[in-house]
Amino acid sequence: MRKMVLPEFQEYLRSKSLVNEKYIRFYAHWARKFLAFSKNDPNLSHDLQVQKFLNYLKEQKNIANRQARQANEVPEISGHSAA
Image (cartoon, rainbow, N blue to C red; front, side, top):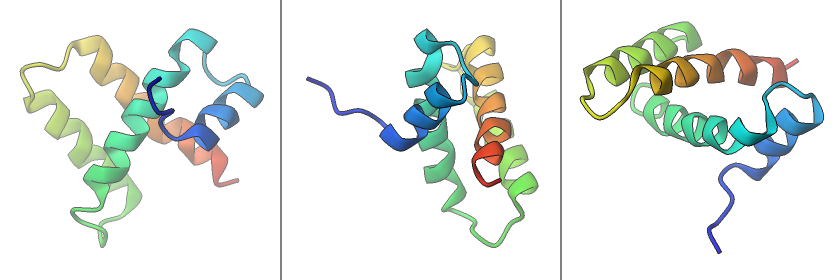
């Protein structure tokens, strides 16, 4: 059995119906990637971290456009959890 990625975040998405159930694990995957990436430059604002992350994804050859769009939505959704 695979370990659940960011289980609290997945439950938050589920409880607020922010994401279609079949995509929740993918959003958690991108949230984990963003959190790991943002540790590289913790002094940047959230907006700049998001922009740098999206630019990084655009440079990656193995990232499909739909995956980059999905990753782009994660910071917006996770911003809701701070409220």
